[in-house]
Image (cartoon, rainbow, N blue to C red; front, side, top):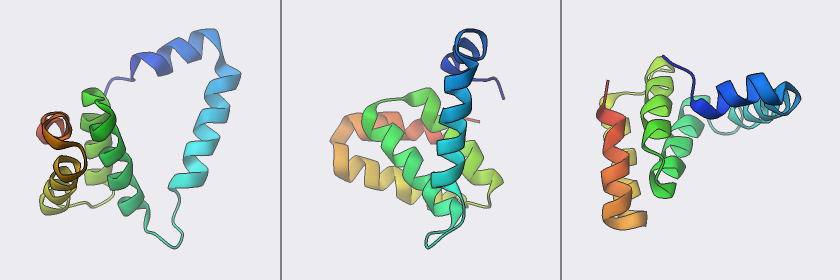
Length: 98
């Protein structure tokens, strides 16, 4: 999978910030009281609500790699629709792009 533009931009222009961002992402995404897969689905939900289609697609692939089922992804898209209406639904369906 291609890197998001902002990651490539940070690699070239501010690798220190990229390291900090990755460290924070690792910290909040690791196994804990909530399984990492659930946290990833929550992240996908956030991107859907915020209108980031490429993020939804990439995070859905990460969730699948962590063992998320299509049913779990589908239910997460439903929650995006419930929380954000049609914009959340339209962006959330990017999770089904492969």
